[in-house]
Image 1 (spheres, helix red, strand yellow):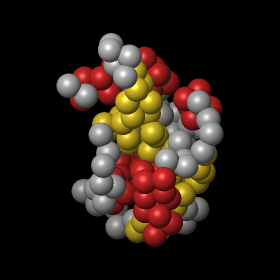
Image 2 (spheres, rainbow, N blue to C red):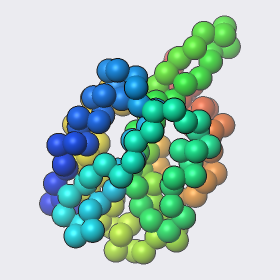
Image 3 (cartoon, rainbow, N blue to C red):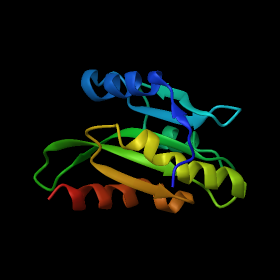
Image 4 (cartoon, rainbow, N blue to C red):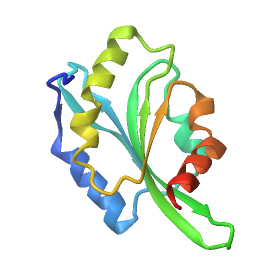
Length: 139
């Protein structure tokens, strides 16, 4: 199912910057006010995971790409690009429907995503939960 929502070119430009230059830690995306286009909501280059989570609204939908850093059991440092689809239970039904039907327009062109995370509450996007998922896909 597709919503017919377009994706602003800045979304792909910011994603390439995050992916290639590592100057960004995460990108938050949202629908514009008229719900016709996905746009960049916020970027951050120097933040921890808790700050990222603080930017996920309790009553609104967002998408995000986060450059997730973690260590393997041997101590080696790894990174995995994670795509988040945040649709909390408190969000309006219409917003959740448009969000779900618009996800692929943004997600499919983003080459290099390692893990997709669907979140409806903070337990589903908690650091340890995401770390478990990322490690499962690293094998």
